Image (tube, rainbow, N blue to C red; front, side, top):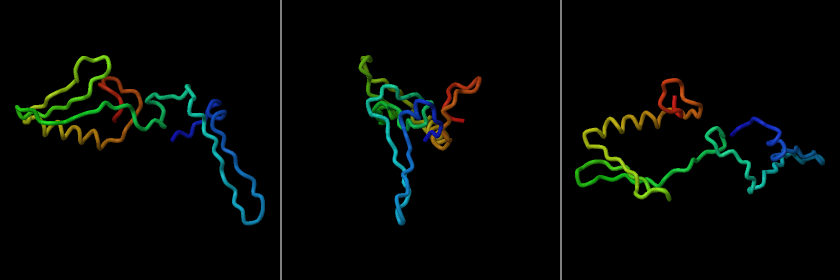
Length: 121
């Protein structure tokens, strides 16, 4: 989680150390969370607190030609489900690349010049 504090964060989340009120009692920490209806929450990829980005429902299956199909549920503004097919002969190289991507650490920084997208280094 992010440890950087800003004036907004300081106003929204206050951490107070409780006073030690006698022998045997331990000091504690009380955390006041921001209200859930706060419309100023940063949902961008740059917020380290955002752990689960929106993800379309996705299906993977084999069609009658033996091709792997990756199909996603259409959005409200699309007429059909987007999908792609991968011929059986090409599956090993695609799977190997996906494994490579899955094993790399996530980096949410901007892409380097000449890099197609950010996200992995």
